Length: 193
Image 1 (spheres, rainbow, N blue to C red):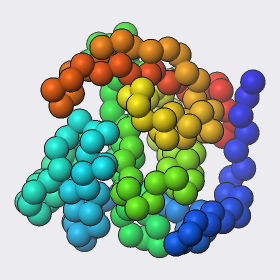
Image 2: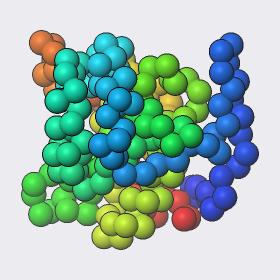
Image 3: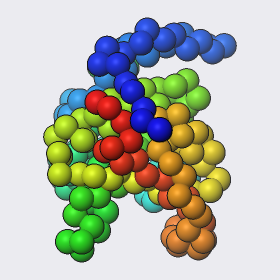
């Protein structure tokens, strides 16, 4: 069943005990060196790094290296911003070095734990999917591989329209443990942009 997105984001307000976040204020843009202090907030966050491949950063030099060198190695890397402050990032990388998979890319994202559960990543992924299929028009498939324990990310992808394809048992060895992962995908034909 096709998914339709309006070109103008619906006005949504999410409230919690502490914050009211207007999701119209969520944007994605390039990461800049001026984002260093904001990047360090989520790159040093133990809760965030528990679900990622990386260890928490211990110095600003690591944050500078991420912004200047690592982020540029992705097909696309954008800051997830609230009022133009980088509260996370969303990335697209080739799914494989094999030419037979060159119409596919892998989606990954990270968000400061302070903002979890507020609809921000869902909003950012919706924006990013459009960017990915527009800027990389050769892509037919986006996929995301999510830890079975990361229920929040699974819900994000389902809300955006990704299909759960199955569990990849003992797919990754991460942080001293073999991890089961879930494969999600979204085809360019699944939505009308």
